[in-house]
Picture 1: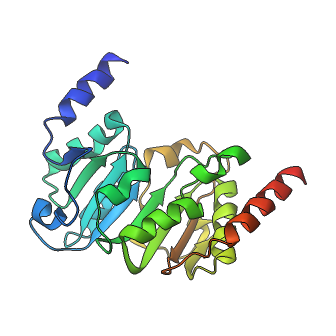
Picture 2 (picture 1 turned 135 degrees about the vertical axis):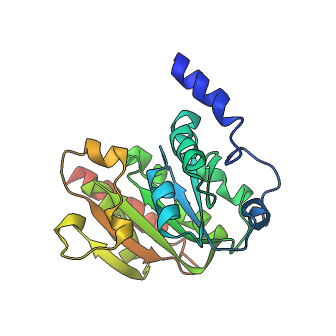
Length: 234
């Protein structure tokens, strides 16, 4: 591990706005933030640009960036401390474990910003809009809670649209090209470091906003698997 990473890992141990694998946080977030405002999660938050920017835009809501890599979290957490942003925090853990930290109905919405698209068919279940993850989100979201996906991967975008259609998830907004829209919200104008890299090489950003119902029919899972296998061989 590089020297800079080691320094950052040590630094976040002292940051009051960073929690690393904490115990007993379910129903304790209002105590942590000192208010009972709604909670928004940014999953795979990286450097936390969205968490920080959303917290600035919505001072009467609470925001938590979730990521496993502490050296990335350090950037957003330090910025919040430097700028006195009190309604943002960072949780270092695996996304698969979010039900350990949030009680049912404790989260109001989730942002997924430029995640790893996990393009190989064998890694489809690792895509953060796969039903495997959506069922985890269901366990912590309020009834009818919203999911925001922002990605430069056309493959992940198409996959997510396939999932919302197959599982009949209510789609609230769907932009094939965010910046081609005449009028977009301030939330969508936020840009992350990874967006600037344009790893997908498409120079296009996709956005999908949808609601999660109380139930995702498990019988659809095999159908989704077969469709993905078929598309991989076509």
